[in-house]
Length: 292
Length: 242
Image (cartoon, rainbow over all chains, first blue to last red; front, side):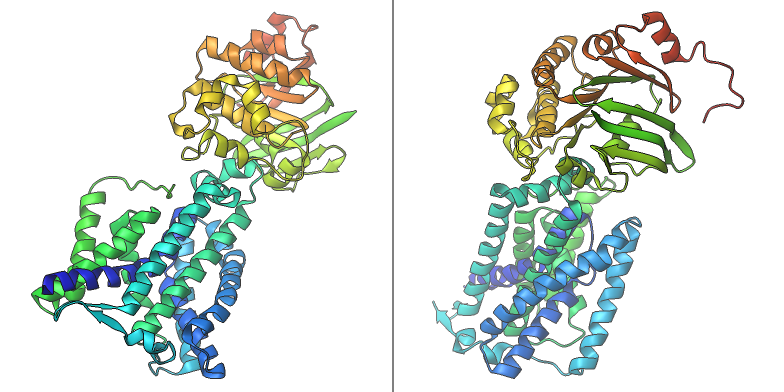
């Protein structure tokens, strides 16, 4: 029964990683940008919600609703001011630009909020600690279920957007062939800016869950980035549903690894990541494609 | 009425000069064939007119407005559409999605998904199929249809017969004849000289980035065109071409 519990908790943890990874996957799939500031963007979203909670006393979920449009706008501006320029200068420049951005965000957060750890758990209501005890050894937390449901809804909504809307087709077309997309009248700049806005918004959703599940501080971003990156790679780079499955695989590896020994938790996730990396890309050429 | 003016256009890839001081006009309703050997600069010229290649110098004027600095997607909404070399469909999108994604809102006209499917009946059954799964001829039909979806006033066709079986090329050109008969203005690149001379009212022949021969298709002697095409009787030019 402890094994069943580990699997259930692994799926919940994995859904959280999938939400964190979703935006990373979008940006890589559409623009071939690996956003090294993705974890910091998620933490920035958590701080934004935290500020709203502090000022108004609102619930963390309401605060996130306030933070969301701000993050969408930030994502849009990030693309048109920084990333678009860096994209013109080859594949290395966006990597360096987002690396720099990561440092800037961390230090601005440090100045604004001090290195103290914060949490959104207290302001998310009794809900965050509620759980159903199925048996003595298996309990299902309400928060875990919420994260899983939200993850499926987010990925499902993205799939619907990409499959059934003209803006979604334009995004896939631009991802597959930006030059040809321009030639049929698609403004690739605006498609990229929309993609980044969506990615940043979903990252801040990950930040919200991070803040409710545990604590965060200005330096929390890079760890979140590593888990998100591992989920993307395990699921197949640029593949949307792959990212959800990759996140869940990572979560399972961590909770099952913890069953062997508590110290193996994070290590087991890294080992799965490395195994997938070697199996998929060992000696071969990386093939890139975006989710259909 | 002049629809397109290309004025002293100069296009480069780094040090390579692909188009050198090319100038010509195209009037509304004209069908012009651009011919020349591989590497003559035809594709680059077409891409510069469509906005996919930023010229080094020179001007492109469309319907009286200077569009030289406009990005490609803005030129599409003005009415310039390019069917690129190699078709360049979006492989994971279905035929219908490939067409509908190219429907630029503002321009009205007779072309929509149904009209394209009527013009290229072979696509009817392929409507829900990813473009990657189509045959070469079907892909070419989608590529042309996709360009038509913006209801262009100037249609640029880059080697629509490339890599297709002769019978398929005939079918593509038969469908094109319908489009052309409705008064479209077309600038097409075609390797097949006979076909180019048959379809077009005027022929522009390029050699090593320059226009070496230009004239009404009927007035041109085939041998003269072939000479210009291969540069057989050009005056001696100092220095080797790039």
